[in-house]
Length: 170
Image (cartoon, rainbow, N blue to C red; front, side, top):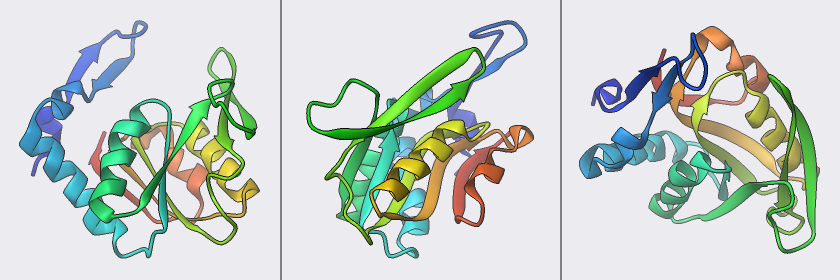
């Protein structure tokens, strides 16, 4: 399936010169959304995954249905300060400042094989931070899946030799 046709490109959002890739048009199309999750599942099933982790917020709409389709659990990686239980956090740089992600201390057990799922791979900062958190808990990142990859931003470099599946590449 050509998933590009389901992704709306919005020029000059959130600032001039940016061509924002909007996945809400993919999400609202049931058959396309289902097919996207199934393609990611087909890739992930070759990796012997124990749990899927997705960074807030759009990683939830990719990771949770993917985990369900695979019959494994889902771990939400949240913005710092949003989790109710003991958690660890890791900071990362944004274009204009810093942000932080967090995960519950008991979300991943040592040795668990973790697949990361998100909507977009751009510069790789969010994913590198997610990998950092998973490793701090003793998890092993065995793959990463994305609806979209902006290859011109070289985010894959942040993933090292982790297997990656992207449905659409710009």
